[in-house]
Image 1 (cartoon, helix red, strand yellow):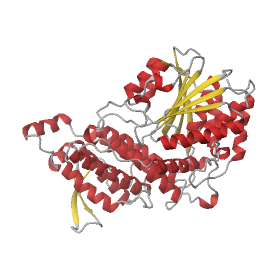
Image 2 (spheres, helix red, strand yellow):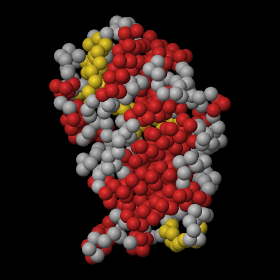
Image 3 (tube, rainbow, N blue to C red):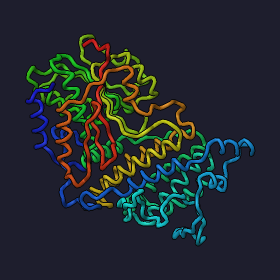
Image 4 (cartoon, helix red, strand yellow):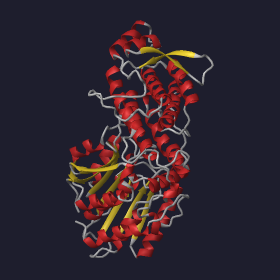
Length: 509
């Protein structure tokens, strides 16, 4: 268990906070510690204190109804079998999902009134959703255009799911004209990014697998902005650091493998505590994994310089490969070292390779501690499964940013464009209809419990997470829950990130 003095170091780091909105300058004396939110002058709250999050709750309600209204797959297959596998027409699809016809005017089309499919169980007022007891859920402030956009997006997703790409393309043309990523409402911004990702999906279905190039520098700069304006990244860093620190207690030689190190923002805070611990600093080796050797080398250089200033004995080993693509010899494991593996999961790109290979290598190296921070979103399953889960998840993410930052805030747009949209696109579009062909695990915690023992997140981890949340006013709606040995951070009633720790039954030290 971590000594009180170590916790005071982290607590004291809160006094060193400052805001960074420019690309990282490798000043680890400040970057590695919690960063204060922007000054009040830059905040224009989009909701009243403690008001319910409108978009994400409406999406949660309507996607639950979508599941009930999904086309009967046996009927779809029967139709295709009897019609030489032609795409399912909108008229047949409409009968399956029990829509109702309604006139809806599009201000962005020249054809005047259009008859479009509508979901049968949306309230007739279109801008109010009520619980069974008749209580208003607080969604009445969502404008009619926002609800129409989300409804059309849902219809488009169903069309894609049954390979009616022509009908999906027509809907996407309408959506891209009606929704802008710079729009004032979260609904419009979410629809704009989902429509763009789904357009990529349709193109991929026609042309085959698509694997776009990644500008890692722009991603990392946006990641730094996200670290500054929300508690999610700090939560992942500090709770994991605490679990690693406890596993390294009284260990003289330690080794950390970071499965996607990026710029290494997480590690200066841990370096500082290790360098000042009561039993003396250990010799620390770090293996940083990533896709760009240039970025890995720069990260290693800056971490080495920081460790040197602290007087911490440190080695850095870069591997420009995915964890699932390497073998144990490439990790250069040494006898007598205490091994930790850290994995902050995201959906921007595939950081680790095939899940089954990643799991097999984790079992082979038998780490003393694995720290895992998962997004509460499903990466596996059918397109419609991924669509429903991601729409609810990212509606909540957009709501949390919209409650905190103005619609024209450049940092907010950078996070939405460079991070959140990239994740949406990767979940829905990358790989075309077959994706990579590899089965993705729905939840890594469920898989790890079969081969590893869970290490409960300690009270100190909970305390550090609470310190980070204290940087954000309660009205912003972030919530922290401890249960089943994990820590979950979310917004309002939706869990978004879960931190857990695991140990190998065969760990030697």
